[in-house]
Length: 277
Image (cartoon, rainbow, N blue to C red; front, top):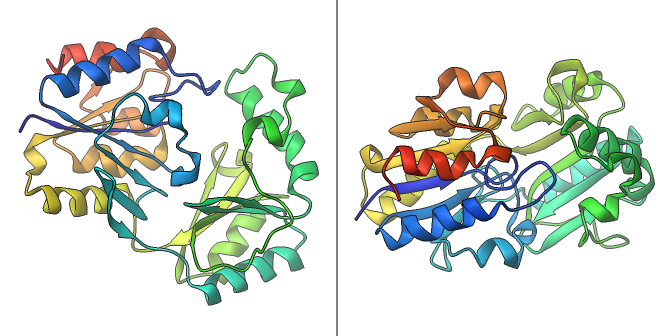
């Protein structure tokens, strides 16, 4: 067996416009031909991993920031919020008039007002990422398969993301749901646009450990690629951690190697640097 490669999706495999660079496709295909295994390791649920990503050729995925592990179409682990936990969170968000969406492997389920309330937030998020037509984007553009007017009390939820009216909403969610993990995204600190709530005991690194045990593989043979704070644990856990040049300072600080940006064939260049291709 060659190396086992873990690649974050947004900002690493895909650029911030949700585009897949041809060089990244070439790198992954060639690495697999060279007997290396390649897995995406992402915050996305399986429903958000569209066919054009699978069509690259992958050995599997880690999703939900570690709540889901799949190897060659076999599900090795899937941990979800309980119906009781989901119900409590949804009711709390509704009481505070915070719009949200549920992230499930079978789909994304938006609250009644998410489509309207989410529009300026999605535009701001896209603007920060440098997307040229950010001012004209809609929620449907960014989440084309999001489902509305459906049951929001579910037992198949990986995590729940919600729009922050203020940073205090995140702090209050952290205090209210001490048994869960509260994160923010779309900006650091007070600039965060979203909060999310998920299971406390999961992260990308722990999910990688589950996969390695199944493969009877060693950590010494792993290499991880990421661009954001959520990837820090994964880069620290794997034998080699690579940060994208377009990534955040937190992930660059723990990286063993910093490659070029996602716009400058960073993934391909790093695969070449480490003799994966």
